[in-house]
Image (cartoon, rainbow, N blue to C red; front, top):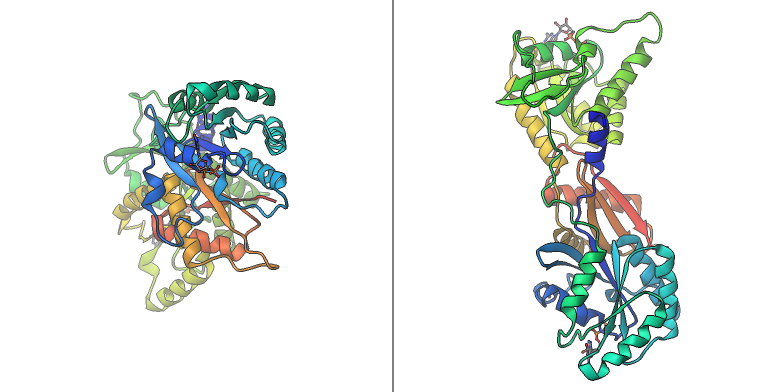
Length: 448
Ligand code: GDP
Ligand code: GDP
């Protein structure tokens, strides 16, 4: 595996805790079972109007393994008829969950609705654990065996009310869930990768020379890191950083034809290989189309970003006035990026670069728990519900941070959200959790 592949694999690694969805007809005991699984702690915690109403997910832990329980009983899909409604719930459950806990009332036996759910579950291929609930004593245990007929494998007899059999059930649930990813995710090994990018002549090479000094270029024997001949290892602020494609920065690659094309290809490749990008802009000149195109590539690739206005020695009061207006107008999409003003030629404010990079990487790797996210979403919706569209109001059922680097959120909703509302969610996420220096991706998954 090349380092590039490794990085791809790292950054796409799923970092959330696994999700268990609880599905079943009304009154089979789903809520009681969820309370049993989470130890009856959380259900009562946020008993305030506007918070509990849409709350369907809870953090759970069994034998030291963390997972998230989603109680589909809290949703009311708009489908007509009981069987349709429950099937609709099951469909959402299987799209969002890693495993499904299907609850059947053993004292009632198999109903048509249960059969309808089984169809959905089978089609999904998700692991299913079958709970035969309301088996309160030995005497009723025999009733659970009838549930073998569902064709989902062994039914686990349980009494959600009294706790009987819940240990075995939870063991089966853990076995069905994928391995819990490490709680604090760190891209492993090697120095952090930085790409210095920007138009020709903005001062990238001057900045790099100033940062690296003359003697600099560390050869990293210790970690055995392979250094691409175009890259350079530089020690800054007590840490070793890998600057990507410094060869492209130092030797201006000029060919008679296609110069622009190759330059931009080179920039795009450098961005892809980096974790954090430093966009250098010549402060003495207007922000250009080309700057904006580079920003677009950074956003699309999901890399962390620091904006560095160089040649500050040439920025007089008048230019500064216009620069601030341009910054607000043209760079409105990346106001979250840390910004520094420097003079590469003299080294003025160069020391501010590393803290800005650190900050951006921190935002890029921020992970918030499913519990935190859903209580945040509950508050957000209570304060600012989605506008009603065609007589209906799209609801957010559940959210989870699917990835870091960059932070990526999956939101399960009852219907498509307005673009404006999605921007509102992103803005509020940033206000609440920071995410300095990083793009945020929202993946909205409407139920219909
Ligand atoms: P849900 O609609 O599926 O969430 O069901 P609930 O958890 O609200 O339970 C419905 C009813 O069944 C309640 O009156 C519970 O007390 C009862 N119940 C739940 N689990 C058990 C159980 O294991 N045994 C018995 N006897 N009753 C139960
Ligand atoms: P690159 O093409 O982005 O690598 O830019 P260079 O580092 O080669 O710089 C282009 C020109 O801008 C050179 O003539 C530099 O001396 C000049 N330059 C770089 N940084 C500064 C600065 O902070 N102030 C001023 N006044 N000139 C600078």
